[in-house]
Image 1 (tube, one colour):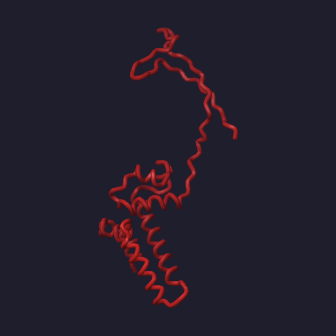
Image 2 (spheres, helix red, strand yellow; image 1 turned 90 degrees about the vertical axis):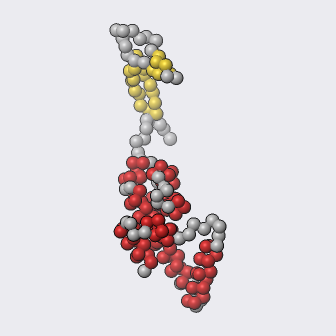
Image 3 (tube, one colour; image 1 turned 45 degrees about the vertical axis):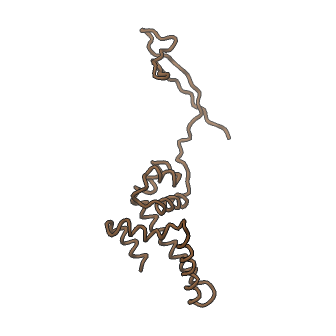
Length: 171
């Protein structure tokens, strides 16, 4: 793949090397600037591409592991693989992203329950199997618990929007 080349001319009067100011070799009081010509590969300038679904999943996993308050923006950038400007363009702020992860979690959980209940066999057997799976997961030492319940414990009713999303899930 060919690389675009940009030619730049840069003028400088001094350079700092290990904290010491160095003058260019042809520096004089009458010629304080030195001309340097550089040939560099061109920067693409296009925003980094990312899969929004994967980024949302990464954020959800992080919030689920640590809770809302313990997660900083830097950790979210790392978990989503998104650069700061694209992060804000795509997700808004941390709170808006958190709302989206809660909505996703609730939607995923609802679909999972529906799939379990639609399996072949009697509805009673489906409910028994569903409860057995949940009980087995809860006894796992690495169990993170239910993200929705963790959020209720952390937030309570402090944020009406978060409370509305969780109330809708629990109905």
